[in-house]
Each structure stands twice: as structure tokens, then as C-alpha cells.
Image 1 (cartoon, rainbow, N blue to C red):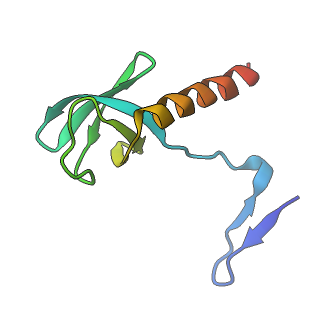
Image 2 (image 1 turned 90 degrees about the horizontal axis):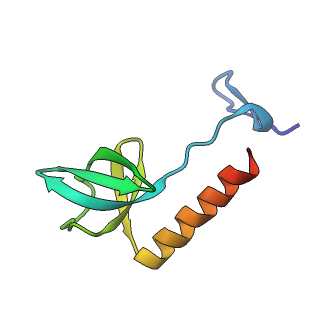
Length: 92
């Protein structure tokens, strides 16, 4: 079992019991000020765009915790989406 604790506190992390947060590639479909509507695989969300320089409709963005954190290439985005779908299918 993997275990790690910080020297100045008592938090201990166990590898097999910790959920993992991931960022999802999503396509920007509408911009309203500093927020945007993004979509992937039929799921849409409003996200904060403040970290993206000059966002444009059609951009593929990495979205995490309600914020677009990076712009990525469409080919990479689509490949990542397919990989995530495959991983989900393995867990069914």
C-alpha cells in the first residue's frame, strides 16, 4: 500500500482510496463576457474563461473545476475524449 504523509500535518493519502480529478477537453460553443458555454459528447457546461487569452468559438479547451485552463489542438482533444470514453467503458 502506498502511503505518504506531510511532515507538518497528519494527512495521510492512500493510493487505492483516493478519487482522481481530471480535466476534460470541451469545445467552446458560445461566449458571454468572461464565461463560455462548452460542450463535449452532448454534455454542456458554463465555465470561466478568464485564464484563456482571446477565446474563440470553436476552440477546444481543457476544463477543470468550472474553469477553462488551457487551449488545445482539436486533434489532441478528440483523441483524449475517445480515450476517456474507452476508460469509462472498461469500468462498466
